[in-house]
Length: 203
Image 1 (cartoon, rainbow, N blue to C red):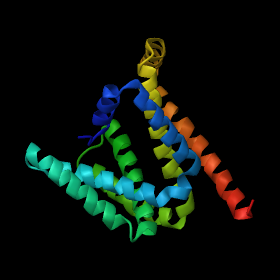
Image 2: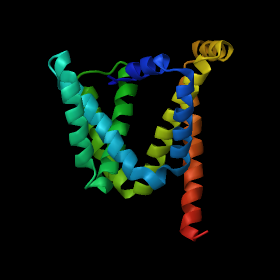
Image 3: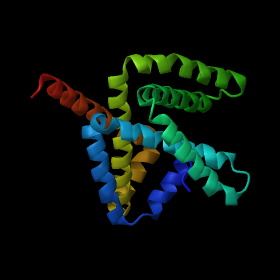
Image 4: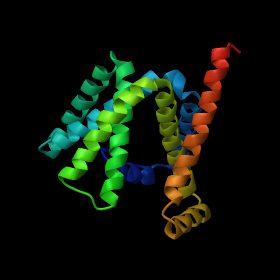
C-alpha cells in the first residue's frame, strides 16, 4: 500500500513501461485543464490523505487495509460538501508539509518545528481561501506535473541510456529532481491561467 514518497517510487519501479503512457496523458490533462476538474482533484487528494492517516493509525498489518480504506472514504466524502473551504485547507496542509520538510532538512525538530508548522497552516489557509482560483491552478498543475513526471520516469527506466543520464545528473546536483518537477508545474500554471482568461472573455 502506498503511504509515502518511497512507496510511490517503489511502485513506479515495479510498473511496466507501457504503464507510463496513461500517467503522462493524465498528467498533461491535469496540467492543462486542472481548474475545470478541481473538485474531483480535491476530493481525491483528501481521500489519499485519509488513506495515509488510516494506515498510520492501524495497530497491525491486518488492520492497515481496513483503516486505510475507511480513512480514504471518510475524508474524501467529508471534503466534498465544503469543497470551496477544502481547497483552502488543502493549500494550507501542503504549505505546512513543505515547511516541515525544509525545517527538518536544516535540523529543526521537536516543539519549535511543530509550532512553525502550525503557524504556517493557520496563516496560509485563510490566504488560500482569499486566492482560491490561483490556489486551484497551482495545486492541480503540481498534481499534473507529478503524474506526468511519474509516467516519464517509468518510460525512462525502460531505456538504459536515458536512465543512466538522469541518474548521473541527479548525483551531480541535488536540485535536478526538484527542478524537473518545478518546470512542468510552472508551465501548467501559465497554461491554465491563459485558459481561465480566455474563458472569462467568452472566447
